[in-house]
Image (tube, rainbow, N blue to C red; front, side, top):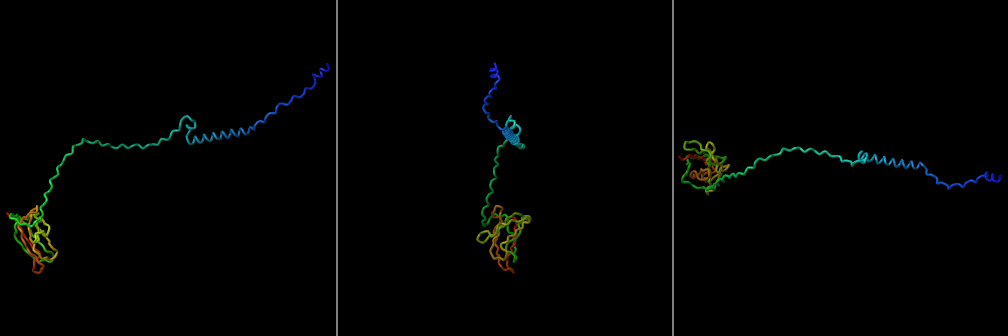
Length: 219
């Protein structure tokens, strides 16, 4: 009995130690990683908010592009053409007849006749002057007067009488000797009078430089 009690009361041997556990990680590292991740998320969210707006941040729809305002077109008054008229052909007037070249020639049916002539010396010019009158003695305007050389070439352009029937043809601005033939013409350049010839010289004292010829219409 005593042996049994001794056995029961004998001290138990201490149990063998359990397997050694790995030391746990430092919890501060986890906090730092979580803070870094949170900071990155916040930065990305801020960039999206600034560049794309709240809808892009929420992800519910794509950001809409800003619509540029287009200028309103100004209405232009429209032209309504009227009925088209057929082009009418307007005939051109017939060309004016070309006047014949001036040729010194006499005529058997004169319109004007030589009435009188006079002469005077002159230092300023050499030529002809005078008047053309109708049958009643009234001046006739628009009558061409021409001077010819002896060879039949024009010595001057035809000069028309003015409203007083007066004409003046200057052949030279100084005394000039020559043989000259004077004649009246029609409007189309044909002879209206016979040919009358006069002579000038260079003597300014008693000579002839300026010749006056008067004409009258034949009744």
